[in-house]
Amino acid sequence: MRRADRFVLIVDDYGTMRRIMRNLLGQIGFSHVEEAVDGESALGRLRERSFDLVISDWQMEPMSGLDLLKAVRADARFHHLPFIMVTAANKVTNVVAAKAAGVNNYIVKPFTAETLNRKIDEVFGAA
Image (cartoon, rainbow, N blue to C red):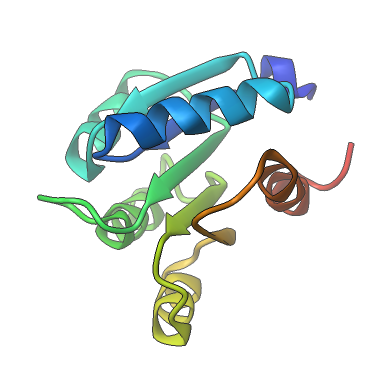
């Protein structure tokens, strides 16, 4: 499937970060990008339509990115949905927790379009 045909859900409580992520995704070929402001609203969006990828911030209230990931993996409808976690904290314990919860990839802020592109290629396999 071409990137332009994939639907991506960005989850971040910081509006500027959502705009940056949307712009970076556009630069690397994604045109169907939707947004959620936290984990709870992301779950609602996932129930409304089908997505091909979730890119979520870790640090959010009331539901963190890690809690969202756990909820996604626990739901049979979304169990295999590719999920990339984004965080400002480069802590080994966070990476281990995310991997244990079933994350497909992990990005530490700040990052470039090139980094995002590489991480997405690793999730989907280079096309």
